[in-house]
Length: 282
Ligand code: PAF
Image (cartoon, rainbow, N blue to C red; front, top):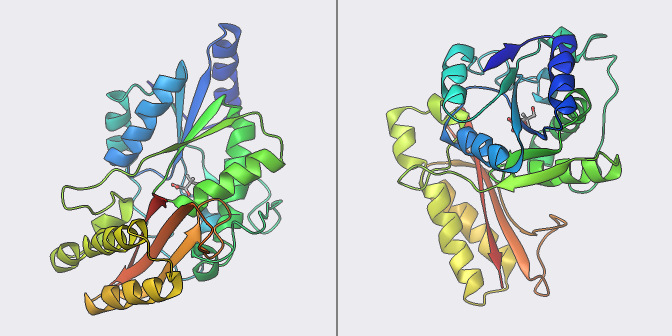
């Protein structure tokens, strides 16, 4: 498994694979890989001959008071994990490689509607940063398919819409959330949690499950349900960012006519912001 840092080198290697008519799968990541990422790599390896995992902590998607500087950078450990997961190539560019004219002068991509609400409200500019870097990665690697985790449900919707609107010839594949035994969704940010916070964290998934069960049983008073769920998160010791119940496609507030509904939650434990979601088909 090779690791390349420059776009020129990456393109030369990929050209070789294309000449051999190999298909290419991309797994975009910010590194600090855990089992969730590895499941994305395995899925990409099922769908394509060659898997490229990109590792880039994208400054454009972090807000001013967020964890860009402290985000764990663990390239050596990441390479070890990828080697055993069927990954072919690691692309780990510098910020200068991705943003040669600097962040302020870089073209940005705005994806309307699905970027709004939920994390889009709490993290202004975040999805602009995600859509911009993922579009650049699509152009750099020109993959046949790209795999993203359903844990970042809104991000997946934003990327699907961006790829569709910009006519990017890539199949965007969603992969199910990988969880710890107690239900906590695997996330690089879980490593920030103290023992005490880690013990509380699974309550997010428990409340998502309990609320989705009520919807599956026929409750349609979504606003009240969301409020109750948010209160339960606060009672458990989390600082609520949002608990929303939305149409799975549009991400707009769910209405009784909706058949596919997604419950999305974000909450802080100390300074760590955790997100999770669950979908129900009625
Ligand atoms: O989900 C992530 O790790 C990032 O948002 C992504 C998709 C790699 C873009 O930087």
